[in-house]
Image (cartoon, rainbow over all chains, first blue to last red; front, side):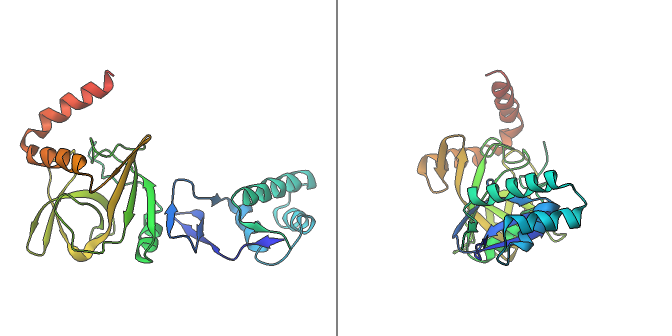
Length: 89
Length: 149
């Protein structure tokens, strides 16, 4: 799986904001923002990857236990799926 | 109360960028300077890049010379100069057409969506701008009424 290419991440005033590139109208009220873990996972999802790989990379880079990393990755992927930003290959 | 209607909104540079790309953007108003037409933290406004010269009664988003973003209404046009005022304010601002980033096309308060060209809305705006010498008293009454309803 990977994220769809038609979204970009922009950092403005300390916030990481996901902007749809193709849409003609953007509602900033419902716009997705990411914390630092989210940004880390977002960047990894630019290339094809798996949940297991994401959990391992998160554990390694953020010094968190597997349970926390699994929960963070699961929640993040659910958020991306909900916003239709993820594509399965 | 004198806060500008687009203050405290760190994402405004991004909004400016998207408007410049020709996109329509919607965001929530911050600040009470456009009361009673735009309510802080309640009203959603939709803006577009201006595709014509600004006109009297337009609500425009502009950038001040020191980089602040302001969403106020044009009450007069004097040659190249746009004269603006917040609907709840009494202070005039002078803005050049080239400072205009976007123009409000739609105002959404709760479930009610109003186009900026809606004749009924424009009649209310014209009356409000025309009666601005009574603004202090009108605002006092309106705010009191809002609190007690």
